[in-house]
Image 1 (tube, rainbow, N blue to C red):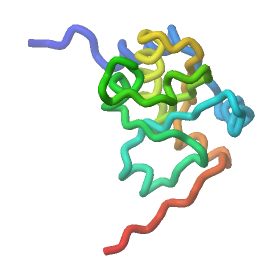
Image 2 (image 1 turned 90 degrees about the vertical axis):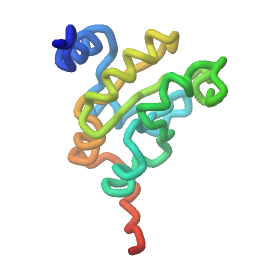
Image 3 (image 1 turned 180 degrees about the vertical axis):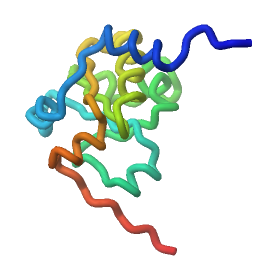
Length: 134
């Protein structure tokens, strides 16, 4: 059975409905008290590539459960009156996540074009990867 909507269409629909920030604009907001950067990458990606200082980690698979205050997994950060800027490695997961968060009722949502890869390439602040023993 063929799929009825592929990832390209999902991304196009998300990007048409959400705010996309350039890396430069995101850098200007980094550290602001009313902004929460949300890192959607899994822990292995973060260990390998490094982390954005101060970012809140929320793997993409837990996002809906952590946003919904009725969920047993709800995280208080998502109930705060803040602007949430999502990012992943390259900008695809974060576009879909921002759309989902917006659809769930978060009002001030955006994502970073090009994700953490673009952030790093542009010289954004990064906590260096931590080598794992072994």
